[in-house]
Image 1 (cartoon, rainbow, N blue to C red):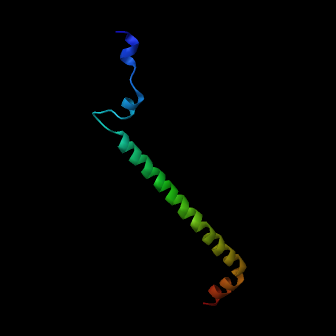
Image 2: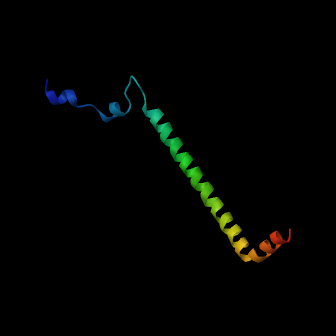
Image 3: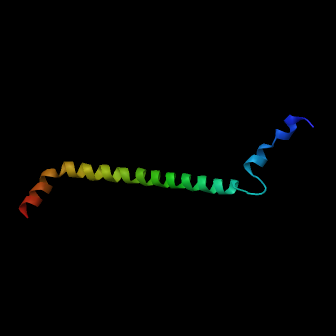
Amino acid sequence: MDWKSEYKVPLVKLLMPESKPLFPLFFMIGFLIIYIFISKLAIFILALPLVIFCLWLYVKYEHRIKAFLNKN
């Protein structure tokens, strides 16, 4: 037997060994990380226009807000 044939292991056996099928575990962990990242990004993208709108309102009505706070 040639020494090279002993070390030729198919890629599938490296990714999914029969004794410990860790590939589904790694797949689920990766999917969870991607899902959390996308959900946080979506929340940030949805909240950003609201924050900009609130800052615009504050800048527009700053004198009225300060007058109201000074009155009370």
